[in-house]
Length: 129
Length: 370
Image (cartoon, rainbow over all chains, first blue to last red; front, side, top):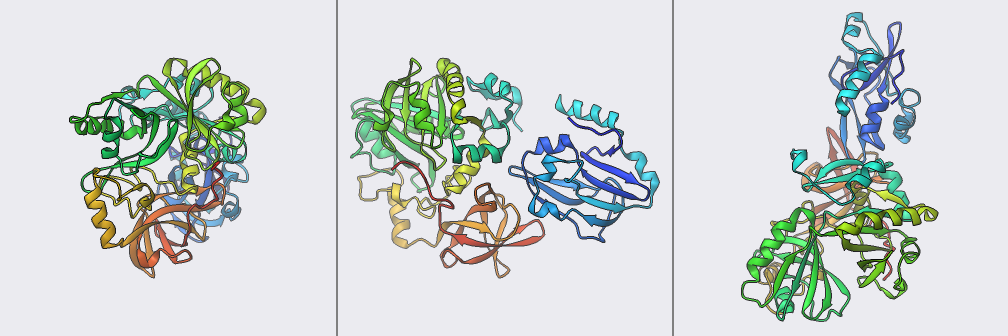
């Protein structure tokens, strides 16, 4: 299981890469492995306001439908259009070409609710039993 | 959610874990939903050969002087013309015409048969058969517990099994079977399946199943054989438009609407459901099960609503992503005016209406060896 140290994580298995007031969001290696082959990603429109812990999109594997939850509140500034034709990029490189959206956020305090890589690894281990 | 500890395990449970299978509860069993991934497994069966553990399926044996009469009364298809070593797809219906189960009847001889039934229905079916067998001179045995079943499906299945089998498999035609030895184990090997590919279903004593499975995995390496989970079993069957009990078929459905008129022989003597089914046929069918293909991206799922110009006209009974077509596909009962191939519809996926059309089934041409 790949869990990069420089990212923050949600309980719902999203990752977030913070760069100033901008953040890139995707789902974790653990999440894509649990979901299996991803065949569809429903993306929000650029400009959409999203709220921390609320759904902003959907990722579907052959067998399951799973909501995507915003790791932080903000405005969607970019979406990964490549995923429309190549949703399998989420499986192949969840922290790279499999990124899902970019957000511009304002409230730094919300970052405190997120997990470090160590904390996230601990959660995954618990979930796996 | 079923309590995991109450779930039954097949003789291959430990093998699945060893092979990296992801096990989930299914119809009261611990079954592998996938190994390497549904899409890859699906392609493996379409392109070379795959092996499935379908030991959860039920087997019921019926023997005795009146076995044939009882079965003729229980099932909708006509077993009168069956030869020894032949298999037949059929339904068992209620008096109302609703479906108790869909199943395969295998004939050993005039007075000895066995059924292969759905896992989720096997106890119900057994009770149903016992209840209806009271006035017949037969013995009915539920042999599900001691019988394991493996499905080997895909174009290399014959060449693979032949390496371990003394019987010339080329002599077994579609929907026929033989008692044969595979790797020294007594098996029943039938040229049947649920994938639309050439292939076999092997019935074997539970205690021998693990060793047979291991040998097939080993011998299968040159053929790129892979273990296949229930996830791909579902995408494979859906591309063929095969009905699944619990989705397309149930005790309240009309099997004529499901397109199963070809296994309902109304000219045959009295059988369970005949009166109701004849009535339904004479009245004419108002709905029919059709294939639906999405014209835009998205995955239709069971119970998603189907619309025509904003009007609700049905809901999906099955739906998935088709790895062969790279598109969302599914099945749905629709009123006759909408069943013509090419009819434009929308499938409601969350808040979106995704354009779709009615297509002729199967979604892909079948490659079974007729």
